[in-house]
Image 1: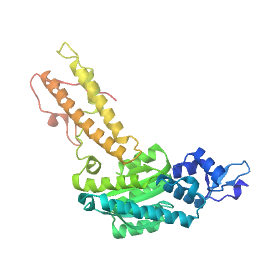
Image 2: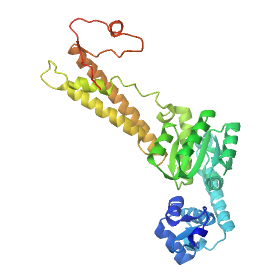
Image 3: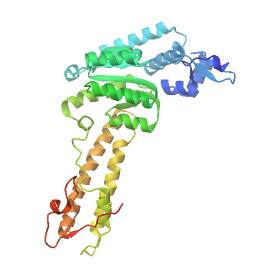
Length: 352
């Protein structure tokens, strides 16, 4: 019966997401090669164990290395791992023969890994991850947290198949206590709101399944950030503050000016649209590390464009003799905060 299955079993959809193997391919591997033999529920639904998922990951990695699936599906798990080890050694030798001296001198970042399957995967990919030094891996978050705060690695890599809000809070507390140059979260399922909260914490999110190359790319970004201070590392330092609030822009758009054209209203519209896209690019979903770089750069360039148009709007208001009402501060009256100017008009305050 289906109730006999433990929490460690996965449906075919979850396995496809975790391994990156399409469901149709999983069915073919099962029917044609007996790669794994999933259990069946009373409704004839497939359920895979963690060992099944591990085996499928090993087969997929070897297929990606060019091994024909029919020649490896009958191997034992130990034999699959040995083949992967041989591939990793040959790949490392190839890098040694063809790698440049600049690559050899690339900085290495200390890394700690958390998760069920990811620590094992990373240990198998060591030869393909030259930019990191793996200090260890943990399947219990408490142990991972304890070692992270004790040794302060450069990079934290965490795996959450189902990413929930409580995990975000634990990550937030960990980042608050430790100083880490990069935090990477690998997930299979997560709500956009949860991913948005992580991005605001500066966490890079990667959707499972990850490969050695995608993880290497994410870790290389960290070492480059440490040297060049890219937008991902600088956060909001390169983002100019908004000069006009939404209420002020709405009030300016309603003004009648001496200009025959409607340039002030058009500039207000452009500033408003750029501000909206600026917020959108900051919260846009990232599928991988390169997406995060693109959106961070878009955010920075859009903010710069918005600041230029705010300068244009300020020029137009000045040429029309219009000044905004002062933004009062606590304990300060309008009489003391406002500076009287001759023949100046004020934008009417917006009533909320």
